[in-house]
Length: 314
Length: 241
Image 1: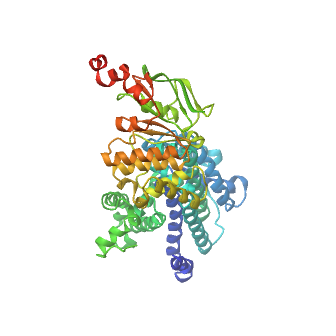
Image 2: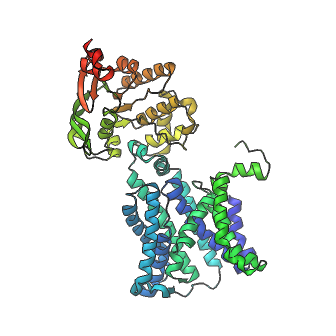
Image 3: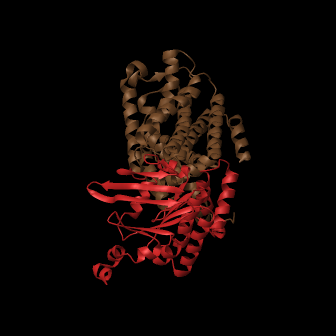
């Protein structure tokens, strides 16, 4: 793990291509969003179809800091997280009255509602015109290291949480909410705590996106399929309820998305760039049928079948 | 001293009175049996005591204070543990993790919670199963896990909901021993059970209900010979004969 960390630290110094640096930055961002989603959905069992809410709120906080208050969008990295938490509190207050699939549907609706608000509240968000800021750095390096630090902080925090009382409580709630309550677990409180941590990091990722891409509009940052669904895919493909699953999922999904977006790096005909939704669909079917626990969760199974190796005894 | 006092408890689901004006109490250190035919309102009474359901009317006092209107998790913190008739193992957690999660009710550090969990698991004869997933346990193990989880919250009163149902005769004797051991450790018990061997041997007092209403109360002997109880279980002819 340390070796991998060092590799990522020196990667942008070795690979000077800004294209590949950009890809890894986006992957880091998805590690954060995927891991946050995984904390809430994978560990706590509250499947969210609305993580774009927190991503978008984070991004817009950073953006509005610049356009309305005239302060640096980097402040949005901190306040975006906290403001996302605040929205998370509200989402939890409304949606945690529902359980299971009904909770998921409520978050889905929440995502659409906030997208429409952002589109129509033009005096605050400039609506569909979007927000354009000036990037702080010409080089990708600062962004790279900030994204890397954010990803590491997020995964590390979640790992700490899962080893603590909170972690036990989150998983208990996922397994059986009634049993959890009878064991003295304040299920409402702990579901909200999970949501707050999740929304905080997702909001940070959103604010980072604003800083990095320098342009947002409601259809990008509040997007159902580019953010909310992608967060779910990253989690499911990598491995739900595993620490490293979303990290692996982020690599696979961003890699795939980019491969298709660029029509296999220009090698395949142009129309293949439209095919990524189809391939994502097939991938999800494949993962659910054969790797229900995702790449990390079913790693032993993959080793057995693909590499014809005996499962290690560990 | 009365640990738990249920006063004129009534629970209505729409027009159906599942529990109708039931009153009983559990003293410190006592094992009280709650019996009645299927659908007579035993589990509903449990669900009212630990506040899964809001109570329609009546009062429930624990150590002299009303607990009606509290949340389920608060009931547990006050010192009432429960098991479920339809067992609810935290399936994808190990046995140890199941019990550790409930031990966090009283302690905050991982180490203390794990130590407490291991102690309780040993008490419940589950020490050799600690690393198994809860869903891999057979029914007897799951019932024990329910008890272990309830005990790990350090309750003063446990509500045992048919913890002996579905066990074979060897397992049954073990279950009886375990329940007696729990009482010897100073925990009072309110138990719902259909298996007469269990309820008659361990209960200090028995409270019988049918259609949500009290039909008899007293020592196991008194209740077993009560015409109303015999009628409820076996029909009118037996009650007269």
